[in-house]
Image 1 (tube, rainbow, N blue to C red):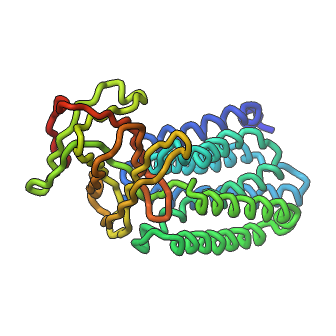
Image 2 (cartoon, rainbow, N blue to C red):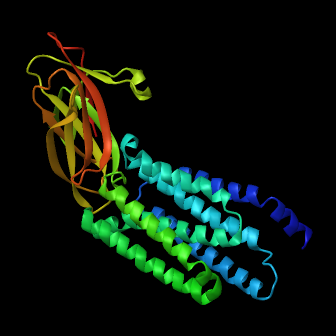
Length: 358
């Protein structure tokens, strides 16, 4: 083995880690709107590049095995595969985090992070093949869950099922390609690949139907609580209490309301161009015995395409003193954002500021 390849192989683990971190760092600086053509081109490019590098490595490893040799470019091609997959997972973490309330969707986000990190524990080729193929399946399904709604312009259970069907079709074609390039190696591991893909398919479906999967491609652009909101010349004029800087570090908002005064919840939700769906504000009050109780559920339609999100607000009349929260989400129960607050009854109006919500 030439000295260069010997040195590369000796540092295979470090190179793999650097490759995946490189993809992660690149995406954090590169991605903007999820429906932007450049963003979609990069994501599609990552998928194609990952598929091509997996197939390339599989073919030459299979050929080397038949000749009782080794494929000397294995380390470099593996690093290329990991860069593509690292780029995909970094993008998914970015967009899924933007599209969710972390307190609700943290199990799914934790799985994404775990998949990214666990890749470093699979070193042998057979395990690597099974792992990367299953990982490609998960990446493909994750991609389909937001690209299909962007293409068809709707978000519902049927759209999600279409995403799953498209994933299965493309993945079957990919396995067919791998089989053509090296049948024996594929069929030696087809059972493990099938079990891994089926398990991933079931888990993602469970995340969706138990409202844990973030409602991507929707994303929270802004949220707020105000004493009054009115529409003025295409903008929203909001009057509310000034927020302390500690709000950014998790301090609960305290809203001071006089008797009979209503409270307004404002949200701006980003949606891709031509996507039409409904947004729901769920007003919930914390009961000491029953826990969080939904007091009112108010839905309104939104249309995508606006950079700063589609704006809307709902009103709660006479909210009683105590702990409250408003979940901003989809009709099927998935949460995009959540704002918690505490209502205090007062006899005098608190200091107010006026803000124009553009």
